[in-house]
Length: 607
Image (cartoon, rainbow, N blue to C red; front, side):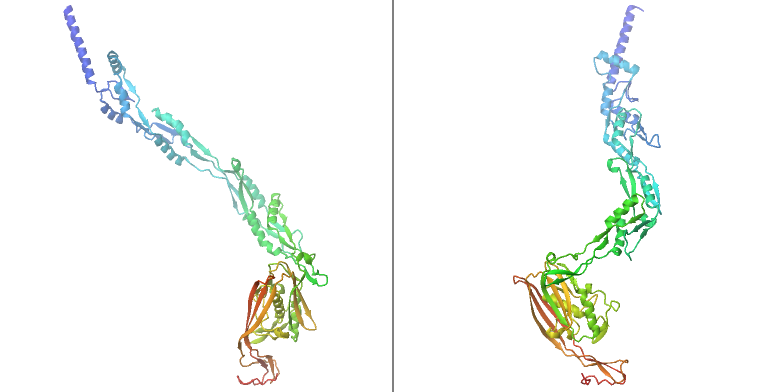
């Protein structure tokens, strides 16, 4: 071949090469150069918009990327896709980098880069967008499945046998610590295995063995409660069986406040123990006894007529504490704590100390002509009120000091007012005493709390011009006479029976506060006459005989007004004592063979 021919050939080849190069460049002017891959997906020769579709199909963002492990009982508990990790492809930024390959720098360098790409290729990483909220939400959802609460150690009783249920630790997923490891691994876009950060939750109560040992000791046998110095007739001892003690066992946690695991301890519940002791307490109460006094008018001093005595009561709090202490050292025989209760008015009290320095009131009544049973009952009841001291502000109850009224208490039968006819009952005549106490309280200006009038007028209470409406009946326990000591000092009650006059006297001693009492009435209204006499057969009477059982008495309403003034003349009390006495028919008892007069005819029985 000639030189010219060779030259022409070279020119043709050169033109062909230049044409091919030009055609290559023109073809790829809006395309990615061949040999470019993104995460193994071929995108060379594609326009960016075509490559975007290829990437979505070929990158495999739905395939597992990260394996989570480290959960107890399983080497791999969960696999996570990029979408689970909050990773999303940014096709624009990814393909911008792919499109720029071979286009940066001088043209000569570009040609060489194209050749290199054709020969060796280039694999670019995708550009992804990371949303941490998605991975956090995923882990928080997983945390709910991982979480296991701790189980405390507990103690139960099988009868009187303590049984321990051991503690178990809990667990939780530490989301923040797991994120700190997972995010870097995920954003590398390379398959990886990441350990979940699972932490232990220690139980607040880790040990119940101390409680078991303590409960076992508490229930080892019965508990016996005794009185250290019992008196004759005292109750006790009190024995609590292990079963009773088991109902009182309480559990408490110790040590947890220092931040460490707590221990369970057992002891007797002092509240339950106190409740038991409060049931015992009433049987151990001995009320203190106040001294009783007479006021010596000559010396102005108090003379004790009966001594005071201390009372006692169960110290429930102290006893409960002692039981717990003694059981702690295995002592199952425990003396209860008894406290003394001093009297309000010991026999060492003085007139000056109490303010009982003068007579402030007196009330009297007469029982002249009383039957022997009535006379006896008055004399038996009266001393029960002699020497009583009533504290300031306290309400005096007649029935409280009177006590039991019965034949066993020494009372005789006598007449009482009951219904239309007088009845015979044990204790008749005691109202003479309550009436006299009422009169002393009336004239002393004391507030009367409870006062009941008799059903019918009783002649004994109107002797020696006492007047109608100044009586007070009692019938324990419901009908009582009461008044309140409203003075600043205690009130001493003295009683006396003047034998010659058959006069009963109540005297009140205290400090005179200057009060003054005025009485108006009695005003008599609504007077009514009784009906015809009552005749009643009595088989025990002699045949043909008749005897008067009761006389006729008119009915009426008697109203007495009392005004009590203080030392300055101000009205303290303005009382109205209203007595509504029913009429009482005459009554006769007759023996067999006697013919009572026709109803309505005049009484022919001799008085």
